[in-house]
Image (cartoon, rainbow, N blue to C red; front, side, top):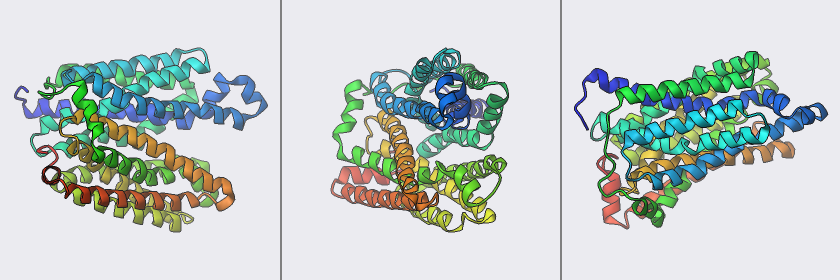
Length: 412
């Protein structure tokens, strides 16, 4: 990699974070615009039953998550020999194409197709951009590199998603998606002119990347993220009804609650990137312990407005504190397939999203109340902690793996 001035380095990191910002927008903006999407794309169904039409429009969220799960390992394997900067540019082009197609598609089915195409690049972008950022930050900065990219996603949750949602409500959901496409176009140009080229791993190949799946530790590390991180999504998925039906606040307070959670996520992500580079295992264990405690606190104090705001901040901080560590852990247990390890973590996170929301929904549908989802979250986070402990114990049976995962993630 060429020598960079400090200004060029930070401009490049900002460009990669802007891509994370765009990913946060495209993944989460649909949640606030489902009624608008249902009204426009499913008019007959909406006229018969608005709730049923909105539920059908929820496939916008499901199909995106499915695209991430499918695309992350597939693209990682197929692009193993591609230089990282060129890969990031190609993924941004795919985001741009899929998002514009979603905005212009005339039917619900074609909109879903556009969302699936855009989602294919999601996991691979976080992997490739995170590795690029880590290489620019220098040795021992693996987790901080991914924290840079994740910082864009957390910023999207603080102010980007509310702004784009407001735009969609005022000017139509298609304008909202065109605005998101504009963010991807800007990111593509920014990356083109600021990010240096970084060669792929010397021994990188599709076979090497796919070979990561032969390691039980890769599967176990993915399970830690897929199950344990579901504890966060069990809370996050039902913030709106908890705010209005449990805490008793007006609907206008929901964006403020989400913004406070986003601020907590931003703080946790910044601290987690530094902590994981210092001691990866300790960061994961402390992170899960904090998630268990904060999600349980949410279940106890969310009936009170002050308690709600305090708890969502802490839940967001605990969840994103562990985010860079989980990413670095998957890379550490797949040292010859770093891109695959990074991409698989995004697939696992989307499984966590679906599992947390689904399991929380089961208890709510059973009549146990909206806060019952928080106790599902505690159970999921506790299971993630136990799986992490098991994974670390298995490390000790393999001296090579044990020594590698004790090192700073970049050295591993």
